[in-house]
Length: 316
Image (tube, rainbow, N blue to C red):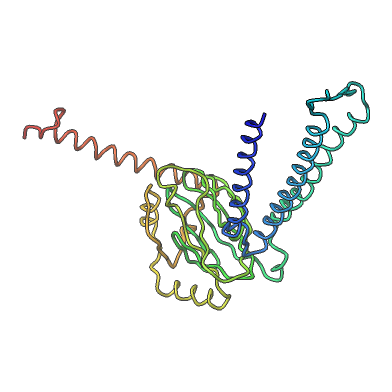
């Protein structure tokens, strides 16, 4: 008995140490340090759910300890435990109503928050959201600004205190745009368009990434978000419009091929000839991939013919 108690105490100490380490690391979790109203709403929902569930755990463990202590056998006394549960309407009512109350208490704020996040943040409703088309292609990000007629690859600039309307799509595999400091993720899919509203209230450089696994380049499919004042954003737009080259269809088609690439900027967008959030855009991607595959197959066949079936150069 003593050995068992020592074993339980050891695991209790390990559990307490683990909990302390977990709580001490919360300050380093980006999602717990929001930089905008969307991320703040989601942080508050997470904290509410955690506190609520910790309360449930405390009640359950308190009842568990009470039952163990009250009805345990002692050396000189046999515990008297005569449960009368079958047909006990009071107990059956409690264990039916309490779970319903718990689910309701968690569902109402969750659903309310989810519906609120489908609209631009109320704190910046005095101006229209900035529209940015966020398109992915293995393993890179294209950010198109239709109003400013510029496009960036693997980085973007946004103004603070203004809602950003991301229009998400993909040129090939399914991905997900996630900027932890500004809000949760949403999926990019070929042939359709999802809308994600985010907003930065503080200037800074935030990390963004693809949060949906899509092959060998997944870990490197990241980007930086430069949140700056409205005037600095306008200066950057003007500089990009004046100094960056135009994006040609040939250049864009080459960027669609699978692979990693550095940051780039262009003074025009690929939206001039294709929008991957539509069925036509999905058809465009399929045709480009088919052409690339046929070209690779043609090159391979040419090499095989040149060297012959044995792998050596054929007779001239």
